[in-house]
Length: 113
Length: 108
Image: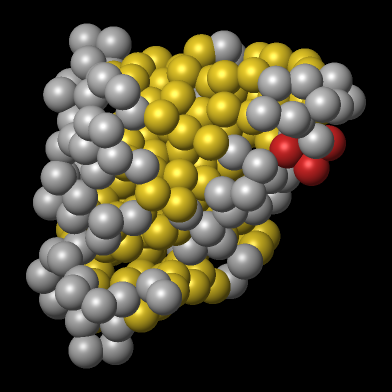
């Protein structure tokens, strides 16, 4: 059981470059989430999806876009990276929000220079 | 807007002490409250609480929900250095909203 897999694990970008983070889950979960975590802080929700083909904004969506073309994948895109987007990014998924636990990926450490 | 607040933000205690972490929430259509422990990497699940007044226990950790007070506490007894972590609570709705977390440091 792979659970939730995030790729890449580490990345360094130059300001203005673009990239896509991939979150893949093999548990047939409906709900998927992207969070960022800055040093010493909690998890802040960027975007989330309640099913294939749906996306919605979280607390800090600016500068990010997402897509959920396939149920098992949730992509997070940075069109023009900024130093303020240096963070650790976590993906999570769940079968049914509120009734089951959430499974987290191991994180992507992104540095924008 | 859903709100989840944790206190204290940071706590430093000596090994062997007992600690109590707090989580309060303001959400509509409450279904459950989750506690997670985060060390270096991804958060790991501790407890899910749905019913008021029923304690969930796992070893030295326990947690209880008070729906009347819209809050939950996480207790850790006989703390060890391995308990040093950020403890997060979250209330699932369509979004999973986390509190800011409590950073717990155990001094040997």
